[in-house]
Image (cartoon, rainbow, N blue to C red; front, top):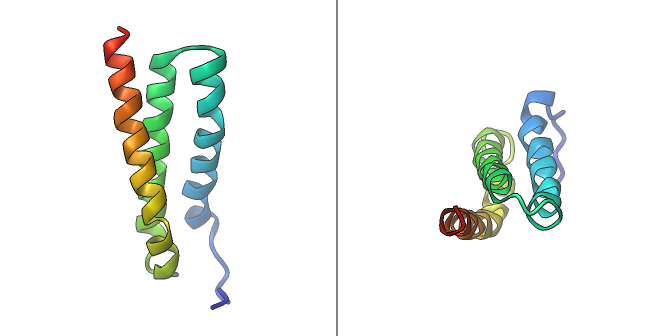
Length: 89
């Protein structure tokens, strides 16, 4: 199935922000070793993912459905990072 509708900028915005948060996580966690910033970043990743899934549904529901494994993974990573941040306070 090909998307023939033009995707608006505000529909693409959460996907772009999710990518930025996702790329920023590794340097924050492992290079800077800043658990607090990494926790904020992973919350941003989770938030933008949910936002993206909600906003894309009216345009292409299948895109939302294929994001479900990523949502499960990011949810697990969020719990893990928040636990690490809490235990290392």
